[in-house]
Image (cartoon, rainbow, N blue to C red):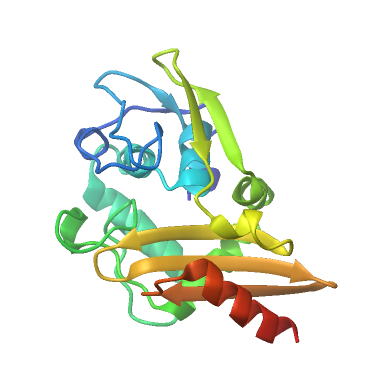
Length: 212
């Protein structure tokens, strides 16, 4: 949605959600947001911070910008986008950062593993997003003239030679989540795991079975 609707250098001023985002920000995986009222962050930097490092504040800033300052309007855009991409199961898209449970926007976002795979497949079809998913880190300069480096949170990128992405995260309801993509001998696999306590370990096992 961001790629379709916003130019790379388009400004994204942080709103109330971004300013109050939980740790896991453009400043680092466990860091609170450095964003301040009146700043204008670049859409491309925020998008990269989400794809590479799951920055909650970046997701909220982009969601608020796309929704014209209204998270409810963003939810309509998000829901329409997921429907258009081909999601099959019942789903709710309310939180721009994909969070759920207590503290999330409107009760959060809920989606089946199957639909997450459909969305992930569409993400990988966008060259710039596919490239970002494989980067070990992303560095940029914020509107405060500070340098920020986002480290890739996908452990498999350094452990499995065939891994090409895509995302790891945690939500209150789904617990530890991993979307893993890999390529070997001309074949591509996409693995979605929810509530998994050892994403890297299980991914190696399941991918080995898939490529066998």
